[in-house]
Image (tube, each protein chain N blue to C red):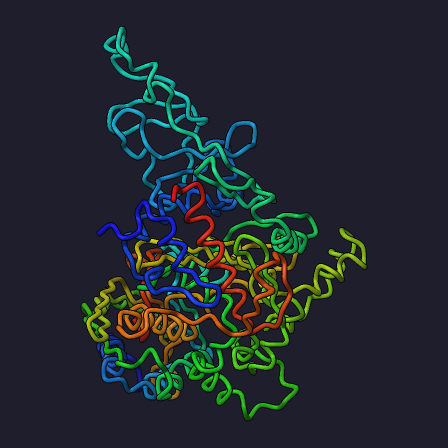
Length: 161
Length: 439
């Protein structure tokens, strides 16, 4: 990619969700930039930053790797039976392009379903991706997951909304 | 279904010296009796005073099936009122927290109340002249709870007039709240950063037992610990660990470690796990914090405060406290097989931000609905709730280190893997469940 088109950015967001649905977690992890984060704020879209208020998850690559490694362990008890996820995305909207810095922001309304045995959990909200274009590839600086009901009491959310 | 109502001895027979009957977890009838008796006779945590900083601020929740709200008064005190309009029963507030100003106004028919609960004004007042309204319950305004204690900003209530007073009920267990508050150079904690809120399909008592279960981490948390260890194994031994690693890796501690940490029980179900040390003992203190503490408390007392770092202190049957990190868990039964668990973070006033960051990080890593540590706990609680239905064995074992001498004592210090800490909870359950109940 010499220069990034809106289409490239939109396709990236779709492809990222697809890797999660296919449980190709190692490839998914590789989409994150070195200092990239996955963030599910406890106040949803109202939250200013990850420090002043807590989050359901705020994870760098190390913690995300821990999640991915654990899922491979046969003694991850909560994965017997295993969870499955389906992301349903509305078309991502390119919110901001900064071609000088090679940084791009998108927002993507979503529905997320996580199923395990007889239980099914449905979450909804908006993804806010901050992507960086470097070395010919797009990488995730931040995937922010703004849940509609982030302050509700939840059962275990085991995969990656 | 009326197996236990009005049958005190049948209820007491569920708790033997070294085991409990499965009905304490499974029976909807016992759950209803718990709401009615057990949670009325015990002191339960409602909230923290810092959640209602200004006059007219309220925090409203359901506590043991009763809608209540704590309200900051104009004189700075805290009152707890039932959240129920005296007229038709409408909840006066439906947000969990907010500020009502100088009075409550019912949205249904505009009855108004002062923030102390007394009736202020009602529309069409003339229509009540000559009626019995003003002499009956309705005319008295909102019902205030009689038994409310604000202990170092932790607000506890008791619904019933039966049962021990606050100091007798908690006794020495209160030292764990003292220790957390004393960790502030100004003696002040603030609830901040929101709560991790979980709904678990298990009985609430199972969660309380697990808070004192030192034998489960080795097998339950095997996958999370192994993943953490594999990510960290190639690092130099002196490489400083990120906070998350510092907090997760100790979950892999041995049976021996947990046994040596020691436990202590107090009368009425309370306990202290980690009398000698805990998985939290390794946290280093920032130098500016130690200096501020020395200034406030003196060197000797500071050392004493900071040395104490238990794993969990249980304030049976609603609260579990960690002194460091400053994290509390509030356990709210919703049904025989459904429990709400909230983990709150406390900011230590006068301490560096690092302490609050530790607390928030710990709550997020270990008590979030997305926590990889909690996933295996929750799965196993739900698995027990289902497995208990199997015929052939109606009892849950609490035999480890049982000693008949324990029945004669109240405060006992013992090894960290002794199931005494769980037996002690059930003895209190039996006592307060049947307190004042006729045979």
